Image 1 (tube, one colour):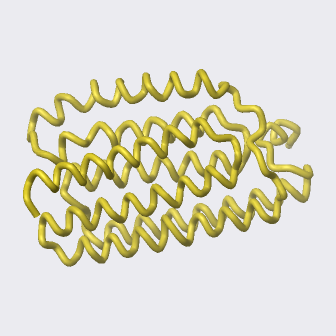
Image 2: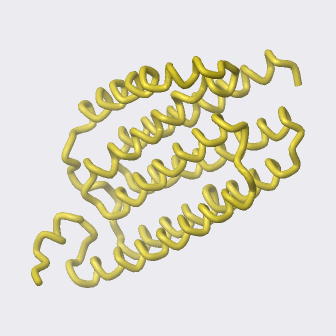
Length: 219
């Protein structure tokens, strides 16, 4: 693969990762948000494959398969099951409205580019120049965590944060060891399963999964 083709595909994949993260702030339909997580999982797997072709690494191909199975199939499948059981269709009114969220996304992206500038300057390359995208997705994940009230939306924020960390790791190191990615993925799967149980208990107790209901809990 020539350098020009590699850079073009890399920019396309990273642009898709950032765009899907921004769209999660725009959409309030929970099914659509989960579908965007599937798109991100596919794009992360594509990023690993692209780096595997560049580095001629079989291990990166295996990482790509693991990422695709977990982030594009298993985790979204768990979230779809939570949605089906809860019957919720839309996100409750977030703490920040859609317009302000999109403005915040633009600001956070600029912050990511400003913060990662010195890091890129240390070892400029096609992959490190895309580092701001990974950092921007991390910041968007934090933003979703602190501004959304629905339990599933907060799980999505955590997964968005994890996707950003994975993308940053891929871009900074041209891939991560298979055992590291496997360990992190299993921890993530366990956490999502625990959150599924928590969401189910909230629905049985309060009739919905709005995190504001937790304020009613007392010792």
